[in-house]
Every structure is written in structure tokens, then in C-alpha cells.
Length: 339
Image: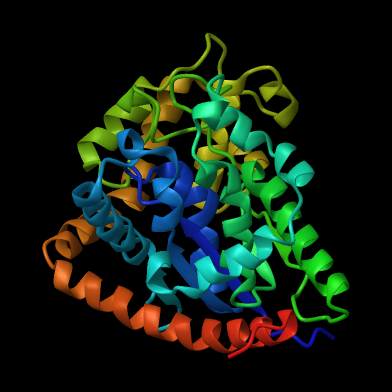
């Protein structure tokens, strides 16, 4: 049996609106894990600034979006009494541990990170060191709390593998079993929600088309409109899962329905198989409105009460620091720092 507390850490960047993909791919599972683990959920504002002012929008925008994302967490079901909810920059141990991990990780490991290559594009020489080093800070985010489990999307699996490599190397270098070897948690039928306009692309807040995603800030009318305008193909709903092969848009919409309903894809096809997409879309629109519109209603109330959200983040930061500080103190002793 592990000597480490069963502890979950996860977070999202405060850049742009959170959307259905964030909700189904992460937040639904976050809410469930509150009842089975000690849970820490952070708004990763330090990660948000890695791509330059043009992307994160500057201090006013960052402050506003940090509060909005925290409000979305609460509206989606994260209970500040059950979970520790905070913004990353409040806990200075994240940055301290990241520096030590910078001296543990190896350039070759970071050079293999595909997400840096995707985000930096062709102009890698002009990318920030922070963007390149993002996975090391992510490892520090996780291990400063001795987190044993991290709910992640498929696109973050490589970063979590790096986190495990860093923990193993640190433990081996110093002859200790100080850091846990964190396990990824990938759950549910919609861990990767795709664009409503192109089923081959992941739903993204950076997509220029607002019709490509359902934002958690969308009204009921907007949600229904976007579902009904979602791209499909000429064929109807198949009766078996094999019938979704090679049909990315159809597969995506059926998967979204299953995730929102809390059932399997097979259950959805049994209910709607043989029918037309027009009928299915109406049912999906009604379901999405039922599930997502109430989140927006709560967010509107919370955005009008920024003092409450700031208080939640401040209290969460204190609780997070209470876990992180003694772990960082032990790290310093292990490394040999004086004081």
C-alpha cells in the first residue's frame, strides 16, 4: 500500500472561455473525484503567461479571466469546502520546486515534447523559455503536493510521463522515495471532445469560429443554435458503433450525447439508431441546454460577486500552501540547501 495520501491535482489556464470540451473532458471527473480523493484544483495563471502578451492579454485580462475560470469551476460543481480551489501563483513553492526540477530534467526529454513544437510553430527561436519549460513547471505543480493522481486529457499524457521521469530521477539521484510516481486518470466517453465544425479537430477556445464550441458562458438559445448548426454528414444515425467509423462529426455528436447523459455510445445508438440527425440534434440540444445552461446561470451570479470568488481563492491558497510548504522544506533538506 502506498505511503502517499490519495491526492488529486489538476488545473486549467485562464485564457479564453472554458467550453464543453473542458467540462466533459475534465470538470465532470473533477467533481466525482471530490468524493473519493483529497482534491486540489488550481487556475494555472503562471502557465497562462508562457505565450506572450498577445496571447494572454495583459494584467487586466489575466486578473479578469482568472476569476472567471474560478467561477466556472464552482458553477460546474467544484465545492470549495470539499476541494482546495486556488490560483497557482498564490503558492510560491510551485516556482521554487520548478527550479530544482529544471536541474533534474534533461534537455533531451524536453526536446521530445510535441506540444511545444505545436504551440511554438515554425518560429521556435522566438518562443519563450517558459513555453519550452512548461512541462517542468507542470511537474512541480503536481509533485509539490505529492499528488498521486492527475486527471488529464490525451494531449497532456506526454507531460505527465515527463513528470514521472522527473520524480524517478530525483528519487534515484538522492537515494530516496520522496516523490510519488503519479498516475494519469483518463475517464469517460468524451475525454476528447471535437469541434462542432470539424470532427477531426479538438474543440478549442482558440478556434476563430465561435460555432465550433459550446462555451460555458453561452445562453440556452446559443447552446441550442450551435448544436443544430453542428456539421454532420448525409447519412443517418447508425444502429451499431461500427457505423460511426470514418464519420468524425457523427461520432463526436453521439459521444457528446453519451457523456452528457452519463451513458454509453451503444445506449445512444440503441435509442436513436436508424433515425435522422435532425431529430437527434433536437434531442441533443435539449440535453445540452439542461446540463450546461445552469452552469452559465451560476457563473453570472458569481461574476457579479468577485469578492466571494477572490475569498475562495485566497482561502484555497492558504490551504494549498499548508501542504506545499513542508514538502518544499523537505526537498531543500534533501538537496542540501542551508536554512
